[in-house]
Length: 150
Image (cartoon, rainbow, N blue to C red; front, side, top):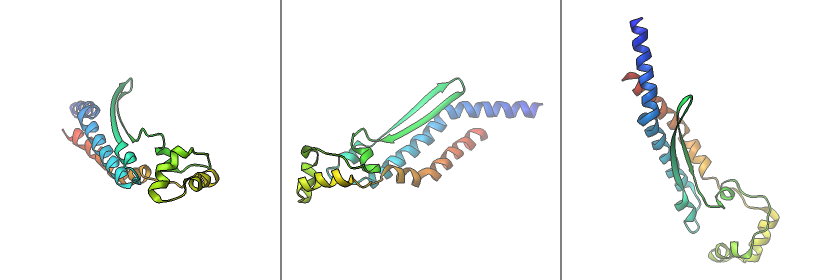
């Protein structure tokens, strides 16, 4: 029984530690890597999209224990449309004036093309997440092993 008691204490200690610094550090590191990859993948026109990418890490305690979550994304209204593309829709002249001018394209032609075909996707977040998913799992697994071994 002594061995079982000792193992139970170690697992309890590991779980409490993971709810604290260990797991949060692993998730934060992984989320920042995803943000950096998304920033590198993001298409650049004015740089607003890249500059808007942020990481938020939250640690919450609930009845079943602690939970650490991370969100990487942009608060810009047009970011989802860049990531996933858009169906055909009408845009105002104001929305496309700068973009069309920087490319030397007739803004009314751009407006009409978006109304007829929508916009193509330019994924930047999903490829960043996909590229880091294996590493994220490995870091969380390593954090668990470190805490259990203590």
